[in-house]
Length: 353
Length: 251
Image (cartoon, rainbow over all chains, first blue to last red; front, side, top):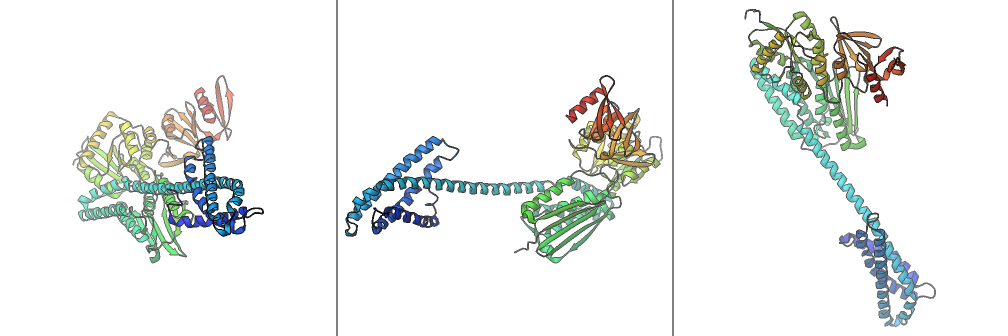
């Protein structure tokens, strides 16, 4: 079905756009030595309306013969035949209309005067047919571009879903096995503590599995996850791991993509605190103001300890996800100072509806 | 348990207290094992090993200061090492290839006893672990060492590879030059070269390795061979194979 006929809202604007065409055809008829003005209008308006529908027929050959994809000669031949046919039909319609109108008194003698217009009307018909074809090609390429855009957007969404799934599947094995080892150590020396650790670990795994399904979660929810993670790590690292939080209530309610902060917190422990003999303090600052949510994660590290594999990938992932979500509006900076590592994030503050 | 002739001294090295605790518990049940001490980082491990003379070391991989592989390179090679890891696919592959024993976290008491038994056998055989090769093999394809550790008496020097200029093999030792200083390390040139990025470090001669960006020019030297002149004016012999390698790298 033709795109203009298939949607009701498109037909009226299309016919309205043909009005200037009716004026042009009228002028053609009424030029000196032609028809009287009244006759010209009476013929031009219905004929233009008729051509509006005849012209739509070019859509089918346009779709058949795509520019740059089909044989040029075949296309030209088709459009030439189409133009001659359409124009002939148009002229015949005009002649029929002229003879019908000629029966009426005010239009007496019209068929004779119309006959003189036939060559120019035929030429205009051919031109209009070709113009219509050109417009249909424009329309088709627009439709195609829109379709490509839609597909691209869909692909992006799919890619992001896949990425999220991969992220979820990537349970940090190091963390898991070390935690299990700590639990096994505590099982004989401190059974209540071992139980406590099982609960915390279960808590963390449950939360990280449930949060990934959502597109947005509150900072507060994300921090709950990080706290359960840090609670497990606290048992492993003992007094080496300290955490300082500086949060404001508005910041807590702001929305973020899930599991965005958690990898950064894990990095801060694995590549920061854990590299120091004496441990250190992980600082977490969240503030909301001026329409922006600002997040700071800071940790010390030992520049003399060997680098552990895998920190760059996590940071890159967070950077990409921020860009996918906020574009240029999402700022991300990771800075390695002499013995401290700083991550700063600033994104537009989104509040739950 | 009385101190018998076949009793072995064991040192536990892990930066996590719970991990040391459970190792101590499991090792305590193995007959003939005397735990001589515990260390929580790489430096401490070397110091304790020197002071307490253990025959077996249970050695964690990820630790502050020095990782397990670096400790192994600096440790007395007559000590039997059992690596300890939670999860490290590359390290485990390297252990398998080089027949180095390792135990996985969480620990199993029976497995710890087996590890002690195997370590005793290695001690009896006088088997030596190829520390440098192991270190080079225990990393993902396409990644290289970022630093080289060297021991000087009780001191440990850390030489970042971007500051490592040249390495010269002398008998069983390597002479490493960095920022105008020399360091000696007991290792083969092949095993060190295996851990370095071959695009940055070139073995220009059987016993010479240079950092490529130091190379100023090549001069002919005798028939068929060359000499490399470095940025500081020092000269390093280039063998026929070394010349071919250089030509390939420099195009």
